[in-house]
View (cartoon, rainbow, N blue to C red):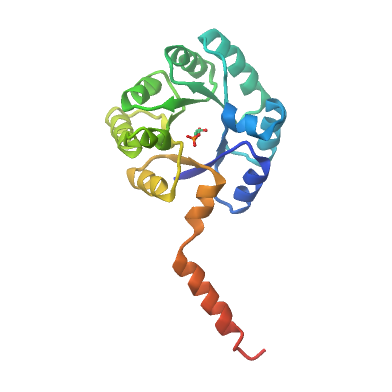
Length: 214
Ligand code: E4P
């Protein structure tokens, strides 16, 4: 299973990368707005730190506008993946990107049938937002299970990129379902490292070590 970090904060990206577990990065307009710097500047800095796929989102609402942005973004670096919203215009742009060899991450997916359309349009990745669906009394992980089944049924090569991850159980369930990628904020990645028995066990080892003659 691949781990992407879901942030535009270069310090978080460097910290997670140093743990040796990061395969890529996802950003979105809200995450970029938080860092308060130019999109292009932030994106290039991220690409300097991470070799793997780096998702950068378009903000146009027409296929034509999305394609203009997609071509500009894809020309910046080889590892840039263009993030496109799952609306009808977005599907048109996804198909055109696929035909032009531009990698895509179709985002804001909240149903398995939307995911089916994204795969048919040739998406490289589909991003089901599990946390936001859970927030609306939906079942984000049930959606991911359905997407994995549907893609398996028809042999789609679109990778399932579980997004809007809020806690380690989302990651555990995604891994059990065979989702290809989970994109997580640094806070969730750090939560995944923790177990109270690891902490108490380490504290005991270090205390006992003090008794060892030096
Ligand atoms: C995914 O690519 C999105 O950037 C992200 O996972 C959204 O997460 P949120 O629901 O926590 O904003």
